[in-house]
Amino acid sequence: MVQGEILIYGKGGCPHTRRALEALPGARFVDVLLDPQALDEMLRLTGGVRRVPVVVRPGNGADAPDPTVEVGFRRGA
Image 1: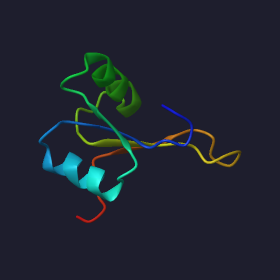
Image 2 (image 1 turned 120 degrees about the vertical axis):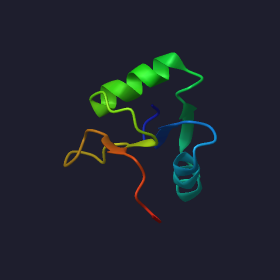
Image 3 (image 1 turned 135 degrees about the vertical axis):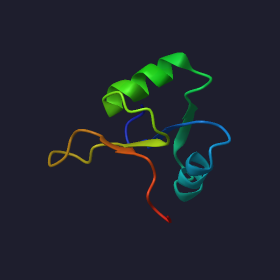
Image 4 (image 1 turned 90 degrees about the vertical axis):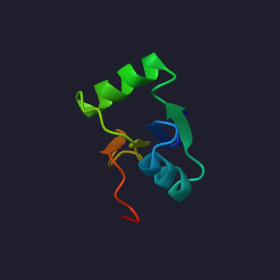
């Protein structure tokens, strides 16, 4: 993950992943069906939850240095 970058783990063709990508057009998309290492990383971040999309937002400095992980996409629902 590049500093300041939003990352979306998802599946190509998934309508929920598509909504997340449309709402966050600058995000980097990783298809977990095509990249087994990315799937492993997603599962590590979610504690084993197999639900997409997973949106990883960078930390924002000293108050919240760690990235936030959102399983599923709720905006615009």
